[in-house]
Length: 509
Image (cartoon, rainbow, N blue to C red):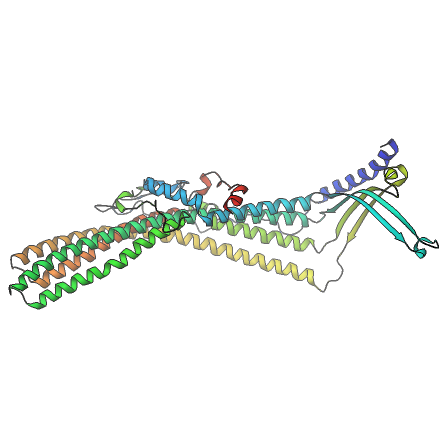
C-alpha cells in the first residue's frame, strides 16, 4: 500500500480512536444509585440469644455425653466434618462433593454465568470490528443502466467496519455490573449447595447410626422378652400361672417384634440416601456403615461473631448479589432515558475487476456519529424505571428476610445444643434407673416376690428409655453438624471448588 493510501486510512482511524477514547472517558459517569454492601444488623451485638451465651453445655455419662465449650470468634474450619474423627465419614463427604450431580449442576451454572459475563463484556466494552469480502455478478436493466439492452457486470468489495456505542451515562457499565452480580450469585449458590450437601451427608450418616443403634437395642429387648416367654410357657404348661399371663407376654413380644420393620425401613432408607448423595444407585455396594460409637463429639465449638455472619453465610451473600443486580438494573433503566451516542466507521475497496480491487481509485471510507434521544414512548421508559425500583425494594426485603432467618437458625441451634445436652443427661439417668428396676423385677419375679405385670411394666419402661437414650445421643451429633451449617460451613477458608473440565461433560455423554 502506498503512502497516500496509508494517509487516507490513518486519518479516519485516528479520528475514530479519538472518539472512542472520548467515549471511554465519558463512561466514568453512571446514572443510578451506586451499590454498597449492607451492614450487619445494628442489634446483632455480640450474642445470638437474648441473654448471655453459656460457656459450655451440660455433660453426661456415656456416649456423646462430653460437655461442649463455645469458643467465641473462632473461625469455622473448611472441612468441619473431620472434627467427628471418622475416616469413613470424611471419605463419604468428599466423594459426594466430587460425584453428586446436584453439585456438578451448580458448578456448571457458575461456569455458564462466567462465560455469559465474558460474552457481554466483550460485546459492550469494546468496539465491534468486522471484515467483509464480497463478489457479486449483476445485470442491470435498460432503465437502470441507461443503455438499450442493459448491462451485465461483476463487482468485488473488501471492507473493515467498526461500530461503538459511547457509554456516556453508564448504561453499559450498569449492564456489566449486573452480569458480574449474576456471577457472584451463582458462585454463592454453588457454595450453598456445597454446604447443604456436606451437611446432609453428615446428618444422614448420623441418622443411619441412630437407626442401627435403635434396631440393635430393640432386638436385644425382643431377645430378652422371648426368653421370658419361653419360661412363662413352661410355667403355664405345668399350671403354675394363668393363661392371661401367657397371653400378655405373647402380646408384648408381638408388639416389640412389630416395631422392628419400621426401624429396618429407616435404616435402609438412610443407606439409600447416602448412596444417592455420592452419585450411586442404592443397589451398588461399597458404602460404609456408621455406628454412633465410631463418631466423636467435638468438645470445642467455634462461634463466629454475629457481625460476621452476614459475610459467612452463602445464602446471605447470594441474596446480596441479587440485591446488587437489582440495583444495577435501576441504573440501566435510568440510563435508557438519556441520549445514546453511536460511532461507526468503514474503510474498504470496490472494483469491477479483481485486479483493480486495491487500487487507489477503488478505495472508500466513512465515519459517522449518531445520537438517539427518546422523546415519546408512551411512558414505557419511566414505567420500566419504576418497575426496576420496585424490584430493588423486593430484593431488599428478600435480603432482610434471609438475614433474619440466618440469625434464627443459629439461635435455634444454640438452644438445641444446650437443651439436648441437658436432655441427654436426664435420659442417661432415666435409662439407668429403668435398667436397674428391670433387673430387680426379674430377680423378684423368679423368687416369687413380684407379679408378672410388675416385670412386664419394668421391661416396657426400659425398652422405651433405652431407645430414647439412643435418640438423645444422636441429637447431640446432629445439633453439632447443624451449628456448623448455620455458621456458614467455613467455605471462605478453602480454595474455590475445582471446576469440572469441559471434557468431562462430553465423556459423561
